[in-house]
Image (tube, rainbow, N blue to C red):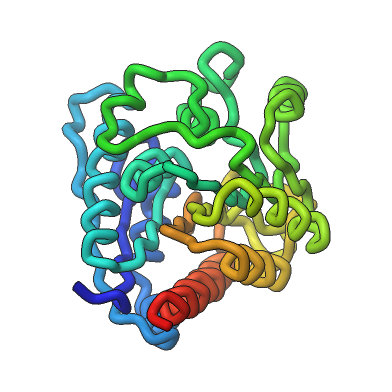
Length: 292
């Protein structure tokens, strides 16, 4: 066992299909040599693996859930080796497998995203399973399927901080406002984020950190077709990641939703390298604190 190994786990799927759209972006980031060098520069031995595809004959949602089962096994195995899991995923519903792999007992979630991903089957209009990821994670909808993911148990809504959220349909905004999720909208005011994290710290001391790259403002670049104005800069995101590691033991992290076909100048990929390095830096610091 080695507690200075960083497990880069590629979950390169979009709607359960490999290496297309945001799934292609996950594969590219996980294999990016400059990104891996940035992780290694923070003192990590970087070990990579890729979650293998599900049977293409399965229906879309069945494929996604099967891929989450496979991800859960790999995240759990990384934790048993005392490696830090950093997941590069196409879709945000990869959170189900990652959280199942680390266990949700007294776990909080800090989630950066332009969108809430909080739809349920009853209110969703798009038919896009990925916009239900945070809802399912907090125990809303798809109860039978989510229970087939080994180790999965819901996270309480009050144990979630959702930051950078801004691009919402009226029904999505209303549903979020009715929930117990703490929100820090738009550009992520640092004082508001710190207050939300302080509230969360009263309930939990370990978290899953989720960074959807469309959390970033359009001035940084377009991470995918759903990118929106009014989000944080890279510098604000770097500071926010530091605040999370300052307050919590981060059990695993994910970088999601990068579609390279929209990143025409490579600026979002560059941002992803910097954000990944910040996660690696924070994880290294918490590992050193545990040792001493």
